[in-house]
Length: 88
Image 1: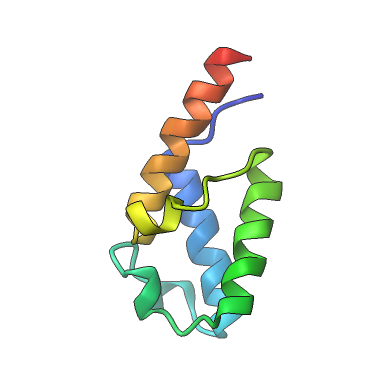
Image 2: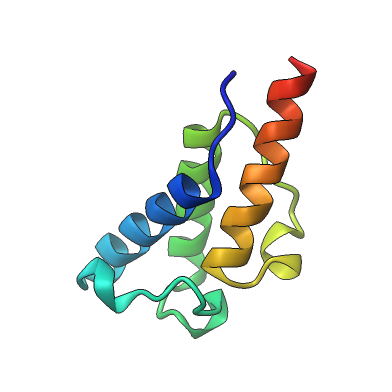
């Protein structure tokens, strides 16, 4: 399994969130906190599932709590992905 770069994860998150909100990706800043986005809990769960499918591994249930912005979560994903790729 190849690791995912932080920029790739950030771009993926921004694209998916922009699509779900029906806005242009330029309207979703990477520093924005998830709780400031107009995603309801169902949409957030669907997004998390799609993210895990894309990554090929599960994120911890506290990932969004400890990494509350798109940029923070993307960096965390890159670190986790790199560790998993190195362990494979």
